[in-house]
Image (cartoon, rainbow, N blue to C red; front, side, top):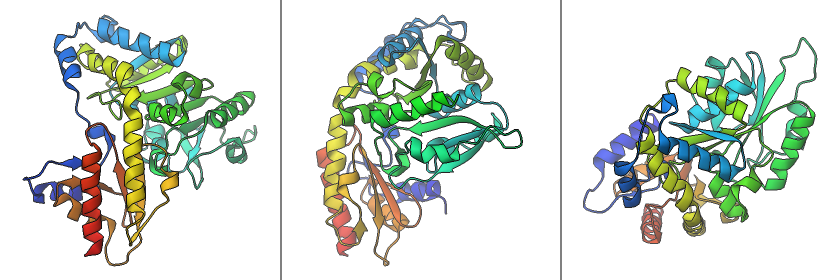
Length: 361
């Protein structure tokens, strides 16, 4: 049974008498009242013609915050990543990334079907890859070998439990890659979480990358949308491929209005999500039958193993759903909790008590 089917059954069987605590992902956040008002009042135009003033303001502000020449608003992070792959590569190229990377595992092989590329995955226990990890996988300039076309880093790294790549590691990778004539793209879906954990701004953390994608619809709380930032020429090309992928959204200012609030106001509260994730991690680590290291929880993602042989991860998430607590199983033994602005400390405490009850039984 698929994870989606399991989730659907769990939702159908849950007790509706208590509020839902949704820890499946930070994508489930709902727009704030301020965002809803801004959406209702947004000044709009046709963005495909470049005439939506609210989208234009959002793109300009994103470029300013990241210290780049330009930005483009896209419906999803996957679209942003795949546009970047298309621009930086040509068919037959290899892309080097960590083996659990989102661009490799969760984007429907679009880098193959749309850009004609394959992945050369790099294994890292922590999810963080430096130049010493990448360099052995960069192909030599030999005509009968598929050539490396792009390096992709992910910060924070979703499937590595929200691991944060330090700014100096990013700089090192970018410096060496550029010396080798290779572009570097950042899947920065949660880059604001990384910056908050590092105590730096996103401009410092991303300064060496040729392009950056980041999401407004995860921890920043906007209902829809991501941005792709880079040079003016890069964004001009991105506009072509966004249209090719069906991303011309016309009066998108309604969405961009919420995105502006997310971009300007929501990064300041991400430390709360990180504190709640650490609270969960420390509590879960004390429960017999679970295995995790709380010290590795740096941001808002907690991935832990069900070490007990008496119950599987999907069975645990089903039992949680019966108590209106939603979580994601990542196979037979792994579970993921993701904290966000719609789950407060009280909600985390309720999830913890439910886990204690399940494993006490």
